[in-house]
Length: 338
Image 1 (cartoon, rainbow, N blue to C red):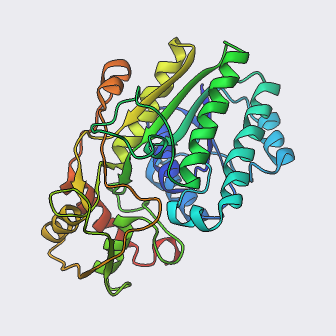
Image 2 (cartoon, rainbow, N blue to C red):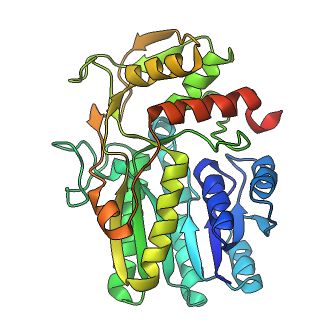
């Protein structure tokens, strides 16, 4: 039986990937330092999938702890989600982001080398494209980043490419996410931010349930149809299905390959607000404020490479994303802290 190590598996995307892996017949081992996640999500992954798995409260900066996991289990491949991920926060505490995301990944790769494990699916980001000259964004576009979070993802991509150049037996998929939103249809797991949400969708849903007074929209002077930023929102379940397709791809392909995971459609902040209002019958009051440092105007994917090479494409639409988010929020008004 193939065993996948899921780093950051208690977090938003990692927890959904864990469910999908278990339901697809994989064995998993999960590690997470629980800095931005909860043990409750681990419990609920087991409930949804009806399966048990080992969990370690382990930080990738703690090499001894990581070593112990690899010594205890016969790992076949790694899905690497662990990392700090808030764009705005990364601008205010950049050193913490560089230390955590980059050093943690280097530690992980060194332990993988020691145990001769060479298959890795890496959770990257569309922020590696910086402020693209045109859309839709293709994998061949030049790379840059407009904030420290994005730079950590870009640096890690370069590190992983150098790793392959040094040892061509590595098989690495770089999955460049656009904007994951939504939740598992069970309403048991979803995005669970600590404090004030950094991401748009949990902010909207917390306004809808009355936890936040209003939504702050950062800028309405972008060159878009309504002046607000346009993004490629993708359902988190579609996103994690892309990871399983990437895992299958690595079984037959050596090298480092980057894939966009997005829908190929762009929606503005206010488009998302309106759709959420339509789906939930909840009014979302909002206030336009200044642009946020590090944000760009328009970004959406060309996902054709993933469709062609991985046999993957997003199936769920914006209505599904809003419906599942609201189901999660209604069932868990305080997230995992019920």
